[in-house]
Length: 122
Ligand code: AMP
Image (spheres, rainbow, N blue to C red):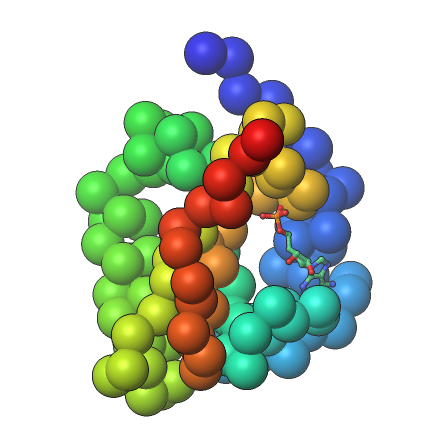
């Protein structure tokens, strides 16, 4: 798989400070911020700081340090958001999954019943 990273994508611009964001948590390897169009009472995006297009790109080419830093950021965000009642984590990947922003991000959704994992298609 040939992953091409577009440095003009909106999350790259957020990481460079060109666009504001509502930050929840930041560390050396990750940034977490509120989704601009929340789909649940809690809707936070966690992104690695490295230039990775998607989950499979990050999983393949990210370093162990980046992976650990990202996962620890997820843990910290879950603690901060107090999602004891449960949450859904989603990584839409490429066109079939309706990925809109080509910088890897994990959606953390919580604060309401999420319903079934996928809406059945007719
Ligand atoms: P996806 O479809 O998985 O790529 O999700 C992209 C998400 O990024 C959507 O939920 C958008 O609402 C969110 N989003 C787009 N632009 C911004 C922004 N400037 N700040 C925060 N969230 C954003």
